[in-house]
Image (cartoon, rainbow, N blue to C red):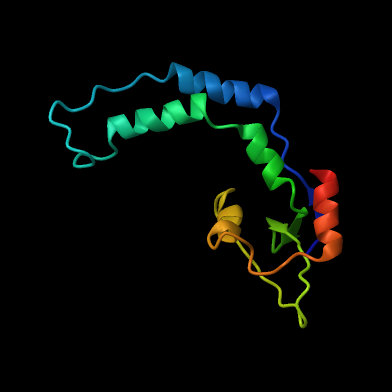
Length: 133
């Protein structure tokens, strides 16, 4: 394993503009005349709602800032780059929690599934997160 390297998310504005342009330019296939929800695959109205949400509501920079509140790192393990969040808890006999994920939001959803992480960040960690957010 290589030494952990600090990591933060910082998607360039040009990349976000490119994604937005592709979302705006998407040419929709006509929905089947007898479309009944998901009978023929993904529902066209649902996909259009998702597109509208990404274009009109979703705030990538706010999501990026929320993700960057946590101390993140990468390290190479067995030839693969692993991304992880490192937070030290206050409980006696701290037990590490390893969350691996296949998509970027999986690690944040794991912490939010119960409304909070299953451990409380240390006082020092909470202070650091407040000062950097």
